Length: 181
Image (tube, rainbow, N blue to C red):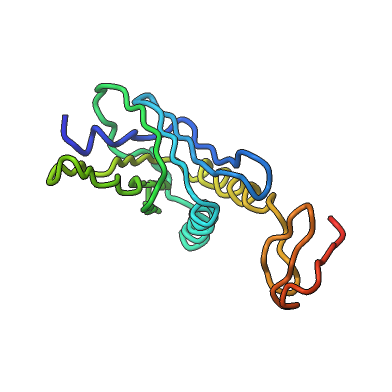
């Protein structure tokens, strides 16, 4: 089995985006599952938002897909892939002809081990593919997860906590207690 196949889930059966925690202290993730295994990719809110925006741009730019099987080459079965990490780098590809999107995520670089200089491990990475209908659902859920957080201050754009907000536009001299929506 090639190194690429060890990191490729192939065509996912499910791809989910979610936020965990209370607004202001949430973490975000995408979970992909396929017959080859499961990958959980943790990320920042902005990363999840950009994945959703990019998916929507790809889908808007590509016309309806031509009839076809919509599946990339199937990988031969191998050892199950079970991975979970925080993403540092993410990329998205779209095959408009097949109607398939592929996400590739690379973990944040592991810290250098000072005891064993020169022993560097490659960061963990995974990729998985999914169909256009799954992409539409993923983008919708990702945007919902991102929007469910603290609302922005209308003056400075900073997040408004439940306790109120010290707006930098007022030089912190006025605590804004804005009504909740």
